[in-house]
Image 1 (tube, one colour):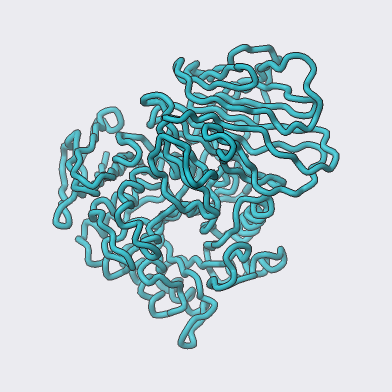
Image 2: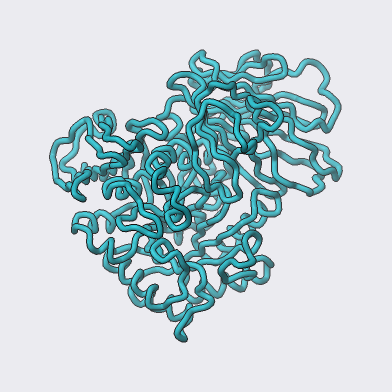
Amino acid sequence: MNKIFTLCALLFLGLATTACSAKRATSPNKELSLEQQGGNYVVSYNGKQVLTIEAAGYGLGSPAQGKQKLEFVRHLQEDYTMLAGKRLHCTNEANEYAVAIDDNTRLVWRLYNDGVAFRYELTGLTGEVLPEEQTAYIIPEGTKRWMQRWTEPYEAFFPYATTGESRDKRWGYPALIEPQEGVFALISEADINRRQSASCLRNDVEVERFRVCPEKNDLKQTDNWCSPWRMAIVGSLADVVESTLVTDLSEPCRLTDTEWINPGVVSWIYWAHNHGSNDYNIIKQYVDMAVELKLPYVLIDAEWDGMKDGKTIEDAVNYAKSQGVKPMIWYNSSVGWINGAPGPKFRLNKPEDREREFAWCEKLGVVGVKIDFFSGDNQMNMDYYIDLMESTARHHLLVNFHGATIPRGWQRTYPHMLTMEAVYGAEWYNNVPTFTKKAACHNATLPFTRNVIGPMDYTPCAFSDSQHPHITTHAHELALTALYESGLQHLADRPESFLAQPQEVKDYLSKLPAVWDETRFVSGYPGESAVIARRSGNTWYVAGINGKDEAQTLSVDLKDIIPTFSSAKVFLDGEPWDIRTVTTLDKAVECCPRGGFVYVINL
């Protein structure tokens, strides 16, 4: 079936019309438009100006002959399936336009109903290193924004601000802005391939001018080359949350066999102990928890190469398999944090070494790998990620990248790459006290920022405390498991905490999906609250959290999403729980400070 969808997509992509000049480019539904104003491009939504973009290429060739005009190229329609994500069946359509910037650079625009994208296509390169890209987003002072300071592992907050003035002049994707009341734009990029680096934003020259700055790429480019897609999801918060634009822009699945790819929930060791997995007896506890909660996977984290008490990784893997739990194991990428970092190290860097290592994993019965501690977004690392995904696919290993870059569409191209960290997640309760007071607001920002662009290994749901306490409610913590999308959903808490919860909570975790047929935005605003509905088969999970330090009533009007249902299990704030089975649902939920709720609705 996936091959049929892909074939249809390719046929649509191959349909081109005769190019013709257009003063104003529009999306198929006419709600988004793009106009040239001088040397800039202005994006509008329903007549409201949203974003001004400078897109002038690289200055490699002579200016194109004649006036640079938008030329309509073709209409695209696509229909494809995903194995995980916010929905399994994805459709999109776009109008494509092009501008000749110079004699070897073509600027290609796509206007989708939920956003805009552009990339540079270069021809006739003769072995030169690309000069600095000349692209920038203009974000006026006073614009509401939620932007993350850039870090190699993308682990920082998205604080609300109305200014670009900051000690940090370097910003990571995605960047959310609200240029008009109720109209949003989420800026990111998509479709990283070989010979490319990823980019970040810098406003180090002018405070309102956020330059697109690709990371280091010293390759001498020959023949043809294109940049990744620069993109902005545009529209209401519902448009942003529900968008699949990142995967729409990315290459179709490159795997011929995907039957072995099974998303699921994972028993995870690190959080409770702030340590890896060199203790066989602790590993057994998490395997036993997976059995009790009917979880398909257990992750054996770092340091398994130094197992204590005469035990080995083979012993741990074999115990998990004997209990019907599928084991995954951790590796250090050995390009980032190396000295003082845990192992195993230097097993994946050379092609022959990683092939040998992954073949050993496959033979042993390991079903997935978590690879950690990368060193940024340069071209070397992008190629390394692709090498790892291609090698793991040959050996039927699921992939979780940690200490890593953000998703840019690889979840479509390499669907066994089921999750990536790139988030300031629950493990930070282990590191600094800052997370305790900021977590609720941060948690209510992520559904509108980081998790929009792809799977997010936040490692949610802790009822007990780690090194630093959490002050979110039990219902808030439970809600994160459905509020956040991740093809491998790692549960953070310790076995004794999970197993001490009411039977209804344990049953919820046992049945928790990691695959969603569809996702719908219900209500919320970044940093204040978030309510999202996700459907798995005939069951809807509606999860909501309060990001404020005071009680708040959250809107939960589901009439357009779930008009009828038979019954629902409701998890509400209580002491510590209020769990009910109901046949009618209120349109609002009272949440405690930093509280939350979950509805599990059977159709």
